[in-house]
Length: 279
Image (tube, rainbow, N blue to C red):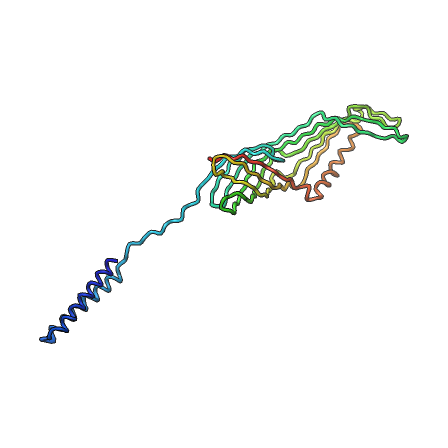
């Protein structure tokens, strides 16, 4: 700005000299030429100098980087059981989460009555004892996309590794089995153990969430809803050797084929509630 001011002063000075020359009589042409040349020289110098001068650059205000946030969560839900996770916000609308979940549901000595009807119309009741359990654990690695500015809604996708992932059930008769004139003791029938697992230990996950992953204050509660794609089943049946139920081992292949026949059998819904603490 000070260069433009200097240029204006020099122009005014030159104009003043020219006005003075017009008011006065010019005694000689040489003197007039020198004055005109002097004024034009200063004018040209100031103009070129002002145009070529480089003003110091004003740095542009840098866009603030997104705030990095972290939180830990305690999870309770269907299928996943209980678990703990760590979430990290690595971009404005993106976050990553790694979690470990564990579930172990067991029901022992469940007694079930089986009622059979004889040809003569009489009924027989046999008691069967069942033990059943679900052993389930996984390490989940998910990415969350939060489209809104407040982060209350999110889309979730990722992969989970299942070191333990199976359903086990065993059963045996605990009373005498009667049918017409035939009577069988529990040891004659034998006992069986069935295991239903999955051939792949890695399952993709897709879902959505409601509530902030990173609490505005210190603590909040959120909910996730989604599903695992578990893939093909692996079924195994073991029966007491030499017993009448031994031939049922061949039914494992039939059960496995029936489970794998429908896509809906391979999808496990997940409902999870998370208590989060902002670090």
